[in-house]
Amino acid sequence: MPRSAKVGRPLRSSREQVAEAALSLFVAQGFERTTLDQIAAAAHVSRRTVLRYFGSKNDIVWGTFEEHLHRLAKQLASAPPQQPLIEVVRQAVVSFNDYGAAAQGQLRDRMTLITTVPALQGHAMLRYAQWCDVIAAFAAGRLEITADHHVCQALANAVLGVAMATYRHWIAHPEDDLLTKLDEGLALLCEGFAEPALRRAVGGER
Amino acid sequence: MPRSAKVGRPLRSSREQVAEAALSLFVAQGFERTTLDQIAAAAHVSRRTVLRYFGSKNDIVWGTFEEHLHRLAKQLASAPPQQPLIEVVRQAVVSFNDYGAAAQGQLRDRMTLITTVPALQGHAMLRYAQWCDVIAAFAAGRLEITADHHVCQALANAVLGVAMATYRHWIAHPEDDLLTKLDEGLALLCEGFAEPALRRAVGGER
DNA sequence: CATGTTTAGGCACTGCGTGTCAAATCGCGT
DNA sequence: ACGCGATTTGACACGCAGTGCCTAAACATG
Image 1 (cartoon, protein in one colour):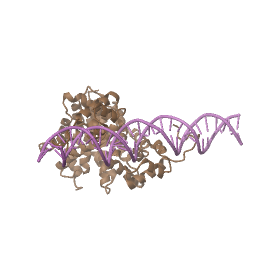
Image 2 (cartoon, rainbow over the protein chains, first blue to last red):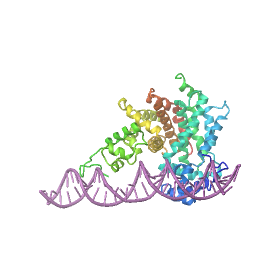
Image 3 (cartoon, chains in turn green, cyan, blue, purple):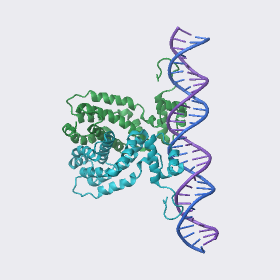
Image 4 (tube, rainbow over the protein chains, first blue to last red):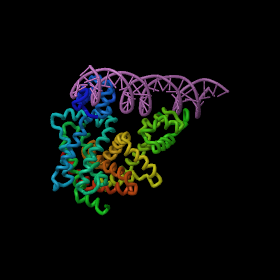
């Protein structure tokens, strides 16, 4: 398990190196028509090593998503308590998707793959579920209920839905600004998911 | 393409027969530990025939979802024009998921698989996307914009999010009523996605 | 230089999904 | 009764993803 702890054989290759090689192949000739053998050859690595880095062909597209998730959780936790729940979520989700102008091209490549290739569309749901758990956990803390409560899950999934829709829109309309559209979409949720409405929905049933 | 049009060799087996055999195997020994060969043997059919009926192992779990979708579209289309958009959606989604008391057991089996098995969680997104398209198309008609418009997609995906959350809740809490919870969750959306708010969001930008 | 530790690559295997082809089984016309 | 077209079925062969296992390679340490 210890990924290079100064002892043992050093790594001959890096995760990023493999990911880059794979991404260019995906963009150039399509995800499905790219085999793991081709990726391994392009990255000067064996097929077995590619799968050790990423676990599956689908995972290669997601890069460092998991670490990115931890930052989302931290930002939510550090929000001022007096700021309304839904507003905290709205703001955190927007800044979570702010990868900076430099990474826009790569982000578009990744999201184009994820939203168009069926195998990746499906696989994305697994990542989105992790993402939802973070939102739901935060809402649960604020509302003093468990994260598996219906209201938390409904809120988190509704936010996810808006985010997915916004990404698809951004792919189809590159001229629009991703963060602006995201903010607009989330604004629609703000009324229904305002805290009084949420507490009313929770109220009484435990 | 013609599935038995009174000419040619008649079908020796049925889709439903294969689906039933597969479902019992999935429930009994798990989805991943069930191979296509086992399903084929249980249904007294060849592996090739199973894949001709369903296209993939994942698809077997979804049964007649596509035809069910058409009924959703028709119900949306036949709603009275004076009924508010979000209310029509709310009502249609609730009754879309009303499979009757008799089918509750089978529905729970199916949804348990879909929400717990990773491969099926992922595959579900592809079906949900079709489902979203139906909702978005209806909203587009009402708002006199195209279905790929940001507001339509955000609405449809938010509704989807609530539905997914509700199903997961129902799996974990069998004592609760699916349709009631669904209705409650959708109620949270009704304010933000009320028609004035939607038209305001659409307004001006064409 | 021996030893332990970790990474890399090779190999075999299971299982899904696809393409292809011949055999089976019908209706229909002659 | 017989052939003919239409259609389904099963068998076989592939390609590819993913997993397990084993050996070799490349370091640090003593």
